[in-house]
Image (tube, rainbow over all chains, first blue to last red):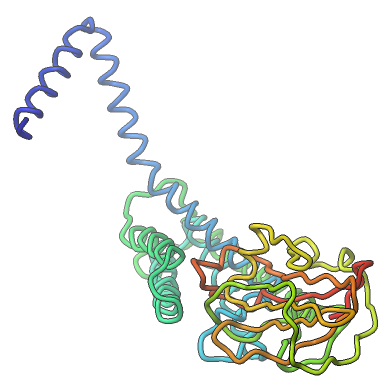
Amino acid sequence: MSNTAWRNRAASKSARSKASLPAPDRARAGDLADRATQVTAEWAPTAARVLLGLVLAWFGYHELMAPQLWTGYVPVIASGSGLALAAVLVHGWVLLMLAVAITAGVVLRLAAAVAALLLVQIVVTLTITGGLTDLTLRDVGVLGLAVCLTGATRQRALLTA
Amino acid sequence: MRIAGDTIGPRGIAVLAVSAVVGVLLGLHGWSGRHNGLPSTLASSAPRPSAPARVSRPARSPATTSPATPSPATPSPPPSPGPKLSSQSYASYSYQVWPGPLSTAAKAAATGLVIAVHRHGSGIMVTAGVAGRPAPTPRFYPAGAKVFVVEAALGDDSGNSDYNLGDDGLVVTNSQERILQ
């Protein structure tokens, strides 16, 4: 069966199914769908913000609490050195600040842009050291979230005061 | 106040200031505890009773153990027992690799490391290093010794690569699970 024929059949089946509903029910279903779309459009960017904030907060907290476990990720610098430890602590602190800023919506787009830059650095470093793997691509997804928030203009629950 | 097109008010500044202070306090806590966990390296340090040896550089292949191959290395004197492994902070993420069989978690934890255990006379010879790097000198441990691989976060492993060997280590205990290395 061609694609066009399949699409026509599906459309006519859907139309029959809608026509079988009484008019008030159809209107109510349409309202519900519209409302769901509206709520999603309003709150999805906020959900994205909170979820990205959670990721950054988790890593920031653990880097600050146990920096010695994270020095293996520091590029160039020897993992056992104090400099690597300090680099992890600074990185953890920046992540924590970004997490708070993004979650609370304080200077959101700037924070998201900085987070995106950090994630670019992480993705590039991981790709150089280990190639394109599942871990690297997962970080590419998080990078995408940060990039989206960089351009987000519609946000709820922002702390602008 | 406007920064990069976004408005920031007193509450926003207060929230950022509080989180900055909290971050500094957490960082000070982390810095003060930097010697806890996995501080020493296999290549550079002598056996330490209170901490597992840490593998020093990145690498990419699974750990192996072989049950009965004699080793050509000269046995070194066995170290004196330290505290019990169960009393250490890393006990919850230590996985037994000897005696076997290897659990799935132990196999995952050993990603990027080469751990070889051979029977040698009345004890065992243990070699642990990073895959793709020259193997360090084997160490001798008396009979009944147990070998554990330490991996704080399995999430840094992908395939046969370990991105962060900073949270990997090796612990050898005696039969009472007191730490020898």
